[in-house]
Image (cartoon, rainbow, N blue to C red; front, side, top):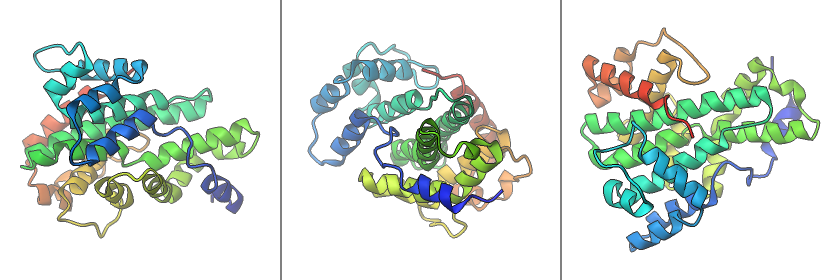
Length: 276
C-alpha cells in the first residue's frame, strides 16, 4: 500500500514542537555542550521538574544501571554516574514517559518503539566499551536512544491528525511501517536540526540505514550493529532472524566475538524489564 501524497504532506508539515523531547532534557544536553558548565548547574536543572527527577532516580536504580550503592538524590546520581550519564538518563526517562497514546494502535507501536530505543541505547553503550572505545560510551548510549526519533515524531503527528479526524487510514499496521520506512530518517533529521542537537547524534539519525556509512564513526557503527541485533531478536517493530550478524561489516569493524554477542543478548533482554 503506497503512502498517498496527501498523507505524506500532512505528516511533513506537522509542527516540529510536537512532544518528542522534554524541555529539561534538551536544556541538559545543551548545557553539557558548553565547555565551562558546573556540576551544580546540572543538579539544579535536573531538579527543576520533580516528576522527571523521580524518573531519573528510578532509572538510575534499575537493574540495568544500578551500582552497589542505591542512589537517593540527583546529586548522588551525578556523583556516582557523572553529569553526562545523568543527562542521558533524563532524556531516556522523559522518552519513556512520552511513548504513550490513548489510541490503541499508536500506543502499541510506541511501546515497541520505546523498547527498541532503550535496548539500542543500553546495547550500544555496552558494545562500544567492549570494542575498546569506553570514552564514547555516553555518546553511544544517547545515539542509540535517539536513532529512531523520527518514528516517534511520525506517531505523534499521526496521533494529532487522528484526533482532528484526519488520516485514520494511515493507522493500519502495514501502512504505518511503510510510513516509517519512507519518512522516519528525513523527519528525524528535521527534529535534530530544529533542536540543535550535537552533530554526532544527527549523523546517527541520518545514516543508521545508509549502506555507504562512515566506517570510521565508531558510535554510528555500534548503533547500526545493535539495531541489527534488535531485528534478529525481534526487539521493536521488525523481526528478521535471517540476518547473519557475524557477516555484517559492523561486526568486523568493531571486532565483535561470538561470545560477546551472547553477553549483548543478555543485557538487551534485561533492558526490556525497565518501565516507568
